[in-house]
Image (cartoon, rainbow, N blue to C red):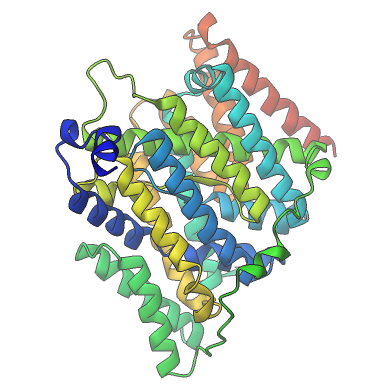
Length: 435
């Protein structure tokens, strides 16, 4: 059995062994375990029961990672995505007043469409239609979005009738605690501590306990809690006009987030051949799509590949055993996470700010000296956080890129899908303005 598994996962060809793969899986888990606490903290603001979301988060991260490892045989771990959970909560549910059940229906539909696109081979067409520069801009815009939410939740930034936003009361105990957590996580990041975000959340909570700013409210480690969200999705509601737009955003961001993570991780592993064709890429997208569908059924936002998987790769992970190990640890977390109770916003806000900052690294890939790149990228970056809408940021970026290419005489027939998408976004903006 062991020999058969080693052949299936190509241990000899990739120069790895069980010890290396398992340790790499543990490393990946430690770097992304913060999602167990941060995801429920965000989604619970929609009215979803935090205990149910915690169980769903662990289950879906476990299922997705094990599926990716077993089916695609890559060291890619999956979990509910940062950015998409913020869009789910703050834009779809709180700003657009969409019930969380309907939002889960939109996540389900995006997963089904993703699956169909993969089956039909349309995925490559969509990838080629969107300028690669906008991929980095979207990732950076989502980073600003997440960081802005973290700053607001921490009380560092507050609303102001004259200037829209202003500096909050830094002497507030909760804000001061958040600032402490921000500094703690930042220092751990500088020191290259792999579990910096998780340790930072725990350290901030411990400090809050000491100064009586955090009160322990333990939950119960019961799988039955998931009944409060499992199969509660509203698919008919998601098929309405606003739901179609939401589905598109979930689909688009998941699609390109997965591609970016895939390229980053596989390049570090040396698994991409000289031809540039990624082996078993269809299986990778199948695993991602199926995990998203499973996540919506269980009661969480879009599940996607995590860039933290690169930590496991840096530790030597080369095969699906790394991802499977991470998945098994997430499953074991089901019986531990609820016992710690709800993590206070003062502990999770610093994590959001740091994660947002790290996501901004993608904009370094952009050529800021080329207006054709810089202007659409900037519009995408700035409009995502300021409008609280990834869809709006995408729309401005796509329209600007298509218009600049058209009026500069660089339009090509091969870019027809780009112009079609730009037209769709333009019609959407006109429709929203008329409403």
